[in-house]
View 1 (spheres, rainbow, N blue to C red):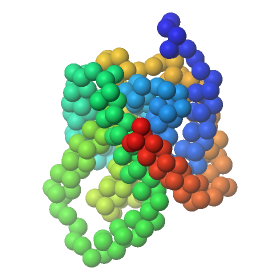
View 2: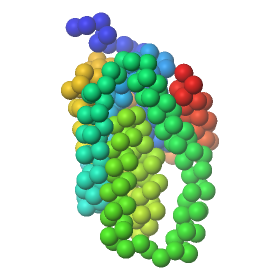
View 3: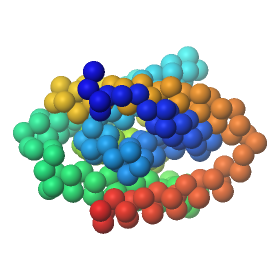
Amino acid sequence: MPAHFAFDPMVSLSGFLVGALVGITGVGGASLMTPLMVLLFGIHPATAVGTDLLYAAITKMAGASVHHRNGHVRWRLVGALSLGSIPASAITLWLMSGVDRRSGHAVELLTTSLGIMLLVTAIILLFRDLLVRFELNWLKSHKTPSPRTIAIATFCLGLVLGTVVTLTSVGAGAIGVTVLLFLYPRAAVNEIVGSDIAHAIPLTLVGGLGYWMIGDVNWALLLSLLIGSIPGILLGSHAAPRMPERIIRLLLAFILVIVALKLIHS
């Protein structure tokens, strides 16, 4: 087995800490895991993204099964998103397979894209309460769009998510949930979250397997992350009711801004 596939306990420890934050804040692990792999452990951005996509597919299965049992998944919504996201993911992977991902230009594109998505995530974290109030006011003063318009918008959202998630592994939760709340105002928040998680499984699985096929998945790194992060998520979820979630969320947003700027200017 090549040296770069060696098990790393420090990765497991980092996965545990990231998992704990995910359990407390609900922020997607990719927002933390992928930049951590790139900046702290020197993993190539493409390998970090590919590995994290498979990690997300595995870890989200448990969450999706719980939401499904509770009736919180709108499968028609999941299908509409997937109609856009899966082809977009496949096209993005096809385009990436035809370029030298080790070139300086490709690395710059991947790190800059990742940095931009982290900034978007940070903005949503910082202004989540304001966005919710804006949404409520907007819904009171605007007519609900037609089902056809909502279906087209959902498909377009899938296209965007398929592209950005495959390119950076970030955005399915931050962008997806925020936009879906506007498109489906009558749906319960649990249904939006559950549907978004369910949709993320085929998207991240297709993306992760695609990266594996083009040689950009580190299986030992994936195992190291799972060993650490799963206990971390369980512990964080258990501790969440007793933690100052808003303060941790705001602190996390500022950290993401710093990391994003470092990636963009690296």
